Image (cartoon, rainbow, N blue to C red):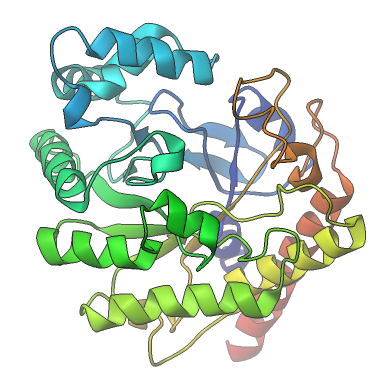
Length: 342
């Protein structure tokens, strides 16, 4: 069972409603989640604890008198499940350190924290430059290291499609270009892990070749900077776009999950993880939101229900059924391979 548990630990989900995690875990097998805040906590699941990966929303440019509470209120409007105090804590270095010291059960030793959702992605109201991202990451690293709990830091999701909408959001360059700037300015030791968002380059035509190219490109970049031994996480992946036939969504989910859990390359993959390209992945989204977030969940360019794995009540969708079956198949194959080699 150890081999299967290792596979489950790699499987994650994104959620817009933290309360949905426990209900979903009764029908869906996954080992970690994130909810776009730093205010969640690990959840007990049928096959062990479901890890929580907090997202640190701190941005130095808003950490000034008079702006902090306003920023917290704006974020709280986007994520109604958290209080203004929660978000104010996530946006201030001093308040963040206080929360982490106080709420140790939320953040076990060795927890991985993510810098931003998509730092530098202007279309998500994050227009930080590479220099500002590095400055904020260093400040957050100092806070985490000062707590002495072995906390780790990941660069938040870099959008890797080479599409016009991504290029526009990164102000005339692609995500990999910003990533290089961050690495050049921050050095190889600032981050313990890197997170990418390899959505389909053509949102209406999800293809495995495109996905594989984005992941291999990310691994190649890490190898170029001498970072092959660094974790690569897929922080968002899925088909949350309108107009994609159900059969296509299901086929893509099956192919993507299998690729993330099994793909290896001894030239650029993680040498301490049997050459795997991806150490963990996170599907977007767990379940469709039960409320409308102006400008986000009512965005006509997104269809959260299309990519959802479970209904709000926790029942598997058609995509969720394929997702679950694929994870189970990879677990079974991994166990059989482990038994055959012993």
